[in-house]
Image 1: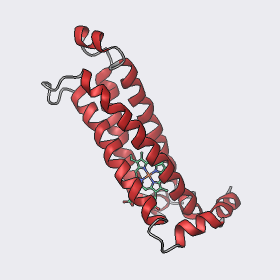
Image 2 (image 1 turned 60 degrees about the vertical axis):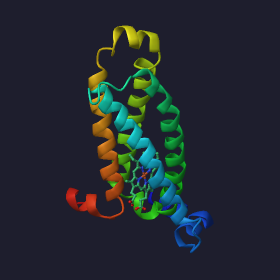
Image 3 (image 1 turned 135 degrees about the horizontal axis):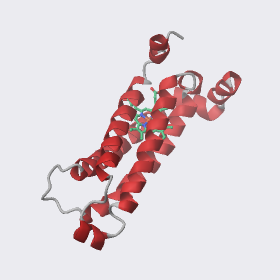
Length: 168
Ligand code: HEM
């Protein structure tokens, strides 16, 4: 596993992303990642808070139109994040925080998809019957996962942090 991480980090592509002075290398990837976060996490948390009762006068059905933006932002983040991960494989691949972050993102995205289909999938039913049972739990779990992913994502910039907490 360790050899694989070093081999990935030593590929020509990873070295170019990491070391090139071009603004289209590391700078572009980190910038795309940061911009994607604003849309992905921003809109997801907005929907989750609305489902928890914030701003109840905002009508729910039109919020369904926000989901395509969430999915495009996720795609931007998955691609830019993967490139950053390849570039930093030697250190990031050994950091437990990156795996915690990826697991939290996976759970958050499954929840967002569930909210999209269960809550917003049938606008007429939503209008008539209101929120399905369990929506509040989904929304609260999504907020916790997004917050955890943001914090663990930010902390991966400081290698060795998680290892020192865990005494590794
Ligand atoms: C889906 C696949 C994703 C992958 C593979 C990925 C991977 C990465 C990598 C490798 C870095 C750079 C760490 C460093 O070099 O210091 C990074 C930064 C970051 N990521 Fe992601 N990421 C993904 C999605 C996300 C998502 C969805 C979020 C938000 C919930 C997120 C939050 C962050 C944050 C806050 C940073 C720190 C940016 C900074 O240094 O200020 N990432 N990510």
